[in-house]
Image (cartoon, rainbow, N blue to C red):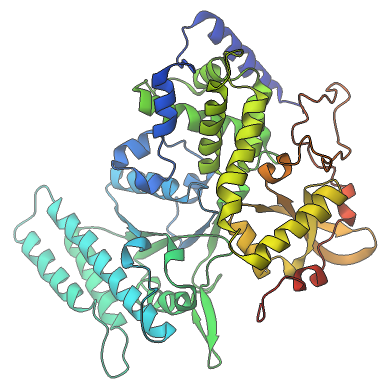
Length: 502
């Protein structure tokens, strides 16, 4: 692995910091262990948003949100959608803009809802309107110096808004024109040019009802040029549109939504090692420092120095931690916590080593990820088939999927469980010119589970001549993507395990 000269210089600076400065982190202390256990792994569980924003690491996604366009924010669970959206919320509020965050989890599960998919969508949208109304009421409360009878006027406008939250009768859904008019009247009265609404946990809306919810959203808010919507969705677990009786309902890309942000593509170690490691260094430092009441205001280079010198035996260990997380911030923090637990069980090393990270990744896979799908018989059999066909027989962890099968239900469910990870790459088969394929890789922990067994893969690697391959470095090897060109998951393989109707 080659490092940019700039990064190499920073690493040298980091080592100098380690020699001259007292350790920030004592990895063997009870206080540090308590800090690793107390890190909030789900951003929405933070009690105080101020703490959440303090430990946020600015990233490219945050910059892409700085637009008035309606956007979809794609990402697996745990990649950092909520944290990023709340950081954007903080930025908007600091600028004096009207911006609100709404979590769809608060609308209920919909599991016990009676009626058609449309009726379920109506009930969820009614709750969404109530949430918007409540948020706007909070804006009135926060007014420092209302002008004249401004507060009374705003309360009157919201009283009208509240009446619009209930669906109409005689087959009507909602009075969309009135929702738009009342929203604009509120903006005019409070002196705001625009309302931005951040919608999180879209997956909490029942999947068959999502297109109806999206249709109501389009008519009431997307049709209003003074309202901007940013929607966080889990890749492969959402449905924005559908054809009903020959008519398309819901939200359309390029018509209603002009910009997509795919967070899963920003933090893949194989694609940008320097950026990803710098990013996760700050993620780790900030979360630990917040728990230990350590100053977060030091430079990025100093954070790098303290993390590398105080916590890890070598920089390769941190690189493996980044790889094991597969670009997922929550998994990164979980694996670090488990690695620190493994480290505490030994007495030889002073810092976290490669074996600790390796065993932590295996523990996350076996203890958390695999049990989530073990109750689904055919899915478990399909995963077992992949493991033996790809890892055991082909000595790889990455394979090709025909483009038209990339969203197959079996694959989507393993993507959601973070056992498979679709890569941002298209590939070609040497014997099938013109056909498009996507690359999919198995989770680091899945592959690592076979380390030291008879089925351990031994694929050829692209090691630099100046970077010899050793057992110490080769925990989970990098893929030789030339050899992957003949490892194809065929449609017949999927049909063996697909449920009827999928």
